[in-house]
Image (cartoon, rainbow, N blue to C red):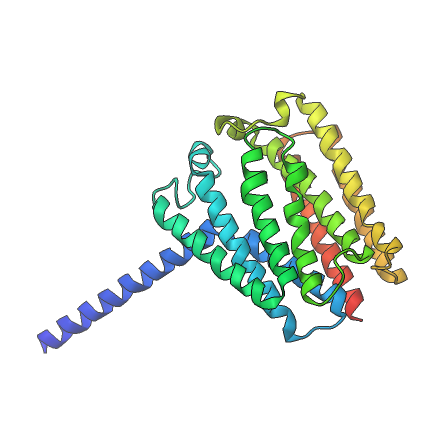
Length: 305
């Protein structure tokens, strides 16, 4: 009887260890691939697909999943590339590689494996989708990532990376990638990333400097950076008007909603100029992200009705 209890306890103990190890591995993989970001990237791919197809079908799952896998590989490779810089920044020092929870070799192996699988998935879709995906990977890991160490304005060419996923989704649905509708939407996504990133710089400027990244504060004072960031927020808000001219958004209701939400975001962003404290930087960061999410939902729903 005692022996039976002992075996049961050992089995239970081993099960808990395996469960804990699996949970830890999932957490590490999620952090390495920046899952919250890459999942959003796959969502914008879905939006691009819907804007072209004008209907919900299971066909969107494959291209969105392919982008998720490739983007996860690119993000993991980025963490490998920036492992030394990450170790110098408080906000990134607990990432899998600098924290020692994952070896550099294993991180690189995971990154390359995901990139290989994601690339094959895209090639199985169409050659055009494959080329767009590989171009985005190239631009992110071989252009933008090294450029961040050279200039504080790297985010401007780097924002092209965030504009590509909806174009990939559009192409996967059979659309012409030079169509005004998808170009207007991709432009909106491109512009959003500039104030999005510079608000992060306002929040973590000291940490970026510790990691040896050039920042806007090397060229401008804090007040000037706030004005530059505010300017790009205004450009972002006005860029949604491109949807009207490209006929991406044609209903009165959606245009009124976009105008109201845009005005509310503009008014809130004015606090940047009058207060200019880190708490406001953080809240404005969340506000423009909420605005972008609202725009994504609005144009998606309109194109499905």
